[in-house]
Image (cartoon, rainbow, N blue to C red; front, side, top):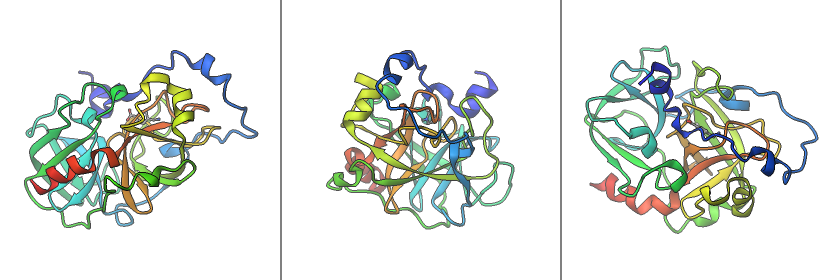
Length: 263
Ligand code: 4AZ
């Protein structure tokens, strides 16, 4: 596997095969924001978001994000863990910069991947890592299975990561964050057709694009009201008009996650 592929788990970017057809259904933006990092976000720190974890290889090169939900449990994307083993992965907390050496590095004693996971466009994109040692950071609360109303269209969400700052671009050395509104199921279905599995996914982004997660942000949190409500999963490119980011709908999986957190 090439270094680039390994470094970013790039498989989540799905080719925009039907881009021209679907774009015709989206109203033209009055102004298009210049693409900026997460894409379109601002820099932040792990002090501001202490539950924000880097998922790295054994050399501490980040390839995905994760969210600390208890001292020894981290929620991430299943697609981030494909081909990984407890020996190949590390979780790094308290490290704002990719080139930092500070914070806390934990080894992983168990990797749970949703048993039905096959590919990002079929859903079930959730995994839970059990750490061998505790993280000295405050975990994030996460949604319960009954909290389905949090995804009401237009709700403000916050995303975080070290991913690329444009489609096919470079990762951000510093942690970044952005806010994006949730998108209705009907609209997201209009963008992605049958690849949008509404029981397992939720979309977020502006109809005009410009702000989004991108390669390397996968596995990281989508927060609603300060609670973990989604996991960065996939999309056609990044920040393109009419193609919002797609996130794991965590209410569907919160009971399964809780079983792993307690186990
Ligand atoms: C990725 O590969 C990825 N624009 C994350 C988010 C999106 C696409 C790809 C959504 O990590």
